[in-house]
Image 1 (cartoon, rainbow, N blue to C red):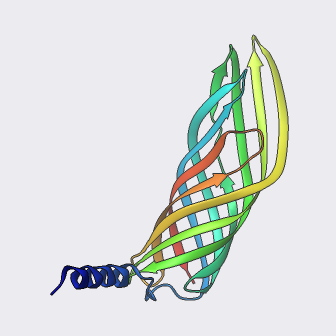
Image 2: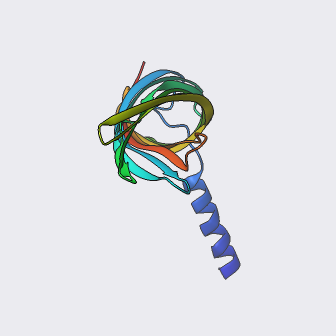
Amino acid sequence: MSSGRIFTLVLLAITLALAPGASAFAEDGFYAGVGVGQATIEIDDSDIDFDQDDFGWKAFAGYRFMPYFGIEGGYVDLGEPDDSILGIDVEVDADGWDLFAVGFWPIGEKWDLFAKLGVIAWSADIKGSFQGESVSEDEDGEDLAYGLGAGWNFSERFSVRGEWEYFDIDDTDEVYLLSLSAVYRF
């Protein structure tokens, strides 16, 4: 057998192995989940360098229209990371409601990869204190959000998934959540 033919057969085998299959658990319908993880907020301005992590969590629900597409919405709490900047104690309490279009890629019988694109309606309470004086400012807005993840469907109704969600919030460098979630399919 020629090397060109072997290469073609190997390439075909790899393509078939990685091609999206109809997962036994990737059916249409409602799902809901909760997740916990690490929230990160980074602000790097000429005068401010804030880069802190805190415990974050989320609750979400969605509907999968077909094995490859769904919508998802939920609430995300990005914790209350704090830091001292130029002698000022700063705390950021941020949360939001999000809505995503989700594309799924079933891999084999029990795995899914997914990507999502949507919006977040967020609010943040920024508190600062210096030598006993306190100041607080509330901000809110709507911005782009997107994410990537993978899920393992270990039964017909239950799965776990890990994901990275990025929130493109104005006046910040990076706001994201790395999380592990439990999901129930109805």
